[in-house]
Length: 242
Image 1: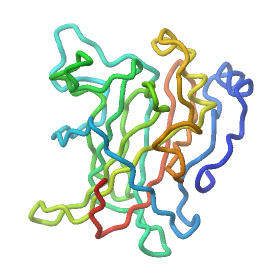
Image 2: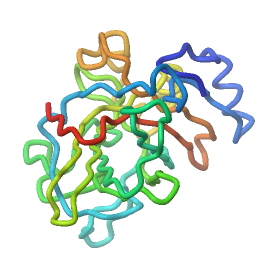
Image 3: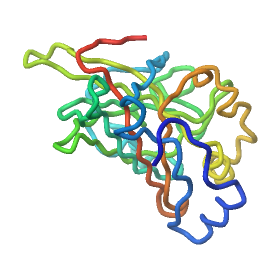
Image 4: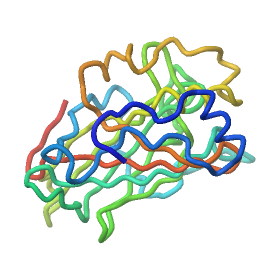
């Protein structure tokens, strides 16, 4: 994968052709890479108004923890996402073991769970955390996020370390993004397509603009699942809150 934001290696027409073949690479772009420029620190980007510090330790984020009778998983293109936080405080870009990584993002309609005015109050889909393993990685099953006015497709992430007494010793929030080529293809598929064209692309996003934020490298096909991978540089020992 190569460094901080790279240009997509495929255009939209190529992406569609690759998807039609199934399982082929979509975009190998825009990841963070150990050994990259000075173990680049991910920027602190706002947790936003939809952050909830909820005890949702789980792999599959597509369900409510207490689903309604007859309810299924949140609709959308499945995304299996692997994250690898690494220390940016030395030259070795070492993986961070035992870190709690929280994820939360909107659904295909652009709605977050737990928001009364969107009709999702009391629900907790597309939220949860995992703890990094011996390889310094966590994995989630979720869906590709939709969009809402003024924002491009993105996923929120918070990385924390705790001492033996449960006190936070390291904390940072950031946001993870996708190449526009991938998002364009996903948004042509239901349930995304019914919303019409999005109003914001990466270049116009008010949060992403001016930041070298982590981008998710994506492979796979729309009919089974996409696979994403991203690496996040963290300054261990610092509590960085937006």
